[in-house]
Length: 273
Image (cartoon, rainbow, N blue to C red; front, side, top):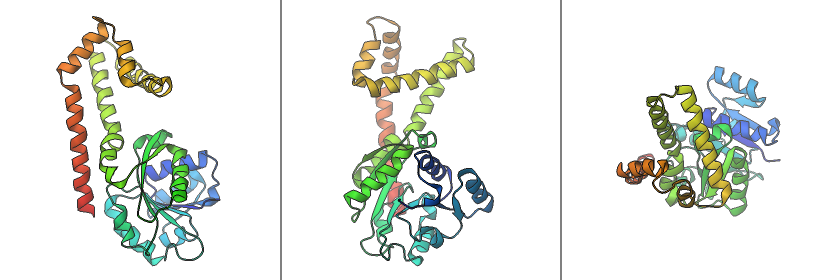
């Protein structure tokens, strides 16, 4: 059985723990590093896993070490990992980084030569088991190690593999994407209220419409263009609404927004490197 150490007990780390346990992994094969005593106690009680504040203790014998800390905390964690002599001995360990904007080379430079690192860009729907994670291998990660990381992350959503050079684009699309979605939902709810609907009813209407539309897009085999055309009858209500959205340059706004997010991701990655 794969042994997994999760360094960082924040929301993403907690979501991963929940998904792993839900998928059938044994609590005895999971350990969490959490320095805040109250948080450590909460995690232990909630998930029934071992929680420690010592990185070296947690990673001993681990197959995967998942770094789920803020980017500014990465150096401290890597220093502790180096002290723990991670990856030495018969068991080969893979480091999986969920730290936004931190390139694999930064880990590889501070860990033993040839250490396998996999970089991950998750998103917050991981909290409800519907995450979208993109993984990028470092120089030394092998195919079977990528497959293992994919299997682990599939417990909290779906996974695609990309090159590390594409991670800034991934960040702009799926990493930041939930915020775009929530903004559109917020705008539609506000517009619904302005037409006389209660906020409760408007929220249910908008939320289920998006849930159903996403399921239809995934399951129908049709493209977004085809499905939109099927709903948009000539001279009908949808056509009137889409015409106003196009007049408001929605496409252009999204184009500029995603490119801005990609550029900012590259800036942050450069600063972190």
